[in-house]
Image (cartoon, rainbow, N blue to C red; front, side):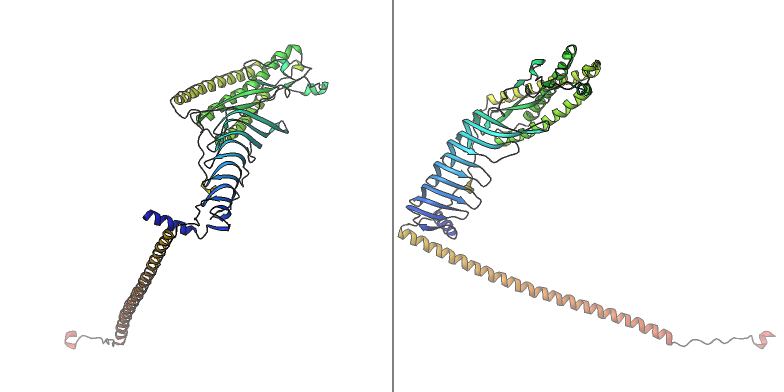
Length: 465
């Protein structure tokens, strides 16, 4: 009985902001206003069921099917921050097939997903398409990417970008002259000024895999054939030297790719889209670091074979040793780290399972105060509520009276203390005054006292005799 009373008190407290505005909010269609949202749609036995639209003050809206006060069936969700979902729901969560449009980020624009969802997150087979801005030299190009396959907790299991048709995956000493575009027929005077008669374009690409709720990353370098060029003016005898120089630059990209693997796998990131965003950020930074090292490498090992000047073999060998050392170093570290994660994953039940997204209570309707209640129960509850209200009101009055008495008593005490302090101060001042008066009287008496006259006493006659 006490629990029922508390429930009724809670429902009654909601009545100030939760109310049926129009039509029938019990069995039929109506509009119901909650504290932070408004529902317009169908009701069954005083519960939201059927089709209807829920909109909140924060810009969220849901238009679709409901069952027993929960989103269930097909629906359309729109968030103020830019996320839109259209698809199946189950128990207030996105479940089944659905399509979603995502807000633009620094790494992805025009992102769209179509596929399976589970417990509020992307999980299962699906397709994710997006665009990204890529810089080649001074030119920025908008590239389209399509990821099709398996997703776990919103993370695509595989490479985060679409493969290029002209790409070549890194391999030790696998560059050949036919991999370059021979489209730089420069003038004679321009060739003489050049320090490099060939150049490569490459980058680091990243792949993800979820294991026991954690992300394992793999990164490698790619070479772009259509963006790399080789001058037709290069003498035959110097082709091998230039090709080895270009291979060294390709190796530098792979060195930083392996370093990125180590950095990301050491962070032990959870399998979710937020971790992927962090990985994207680290990828951009590592690509920039790789570009800077490549520029330094080309500057220090530059030579003009057209002039017949021999290459500085000592500087080249120094760079070759440095590159080989870093390639081996990061490969060993990463092998140990991934083996450790896989070993721990073998005994974990969450291996390759999607994590459940918590339900956002802000985007759910509040408690509805039912319109139809049995008369006797209703009257009893109303009386109980009135009695409790009267009791609380009387307690409030008593508390106010007690507080008033305490304040008055405190004021009187403070006034008495002030009078006491004032009296003590006056007595002290009177004592000081009397003391000063005594001092002044002594001084005056001392001044008025007659001085003794001095008369010289000469010796008597007999004494003189």
